[in-house]
Length: 58
Image (cartoon, rainbow, N blue to C red):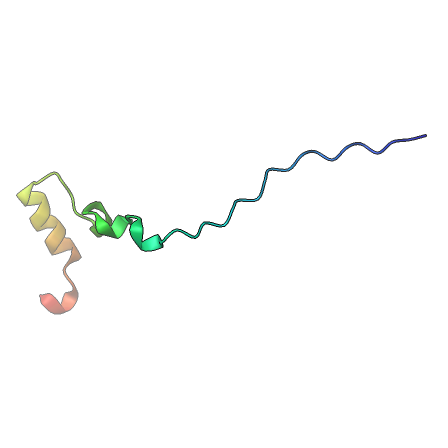
């Protein structure tokens, strides 16, 4: 009599979550999400402004 090997136990499926997604903070709700930098170096800010300025703003 041959017995088949027992299948390995599987991880349980994640439960459905019905929380309000608007109650959670997203990266857009923080300064970091908008690309803000905290170094405060004005020379670096000017360089970044000039590097990222669109061509129609020359």
